Length: 83
Image (cartoon, rainbow, N blue to C red):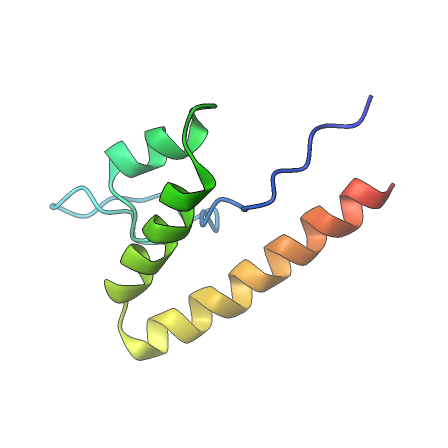
C-alpha cells in the first residue's frame, strides 16, 4: 500500500540540531512548530504560513541553500510516490 502523499512537504532537511533559542539549524523551525507539522489536524494554510515564517528567519545565502535542498527533497518524494 502506498503512503499518502502530503501536498505540502515538511521543511526538514535532516540536519536537526537546535540552537539556544530552540530553533533547528537545518530548517529554522522551533520544536513546537516541528511537532505541529506532524499533527493530522494541522492545516495546509498554517503550513504555508509557517514556511514563509521560517524563510524569513534565514539569511539570504542560507535560504538559497535550504531552498535548493528542499526542492530536491520534494522531487524525491514526488518520484517515490510514482513507484
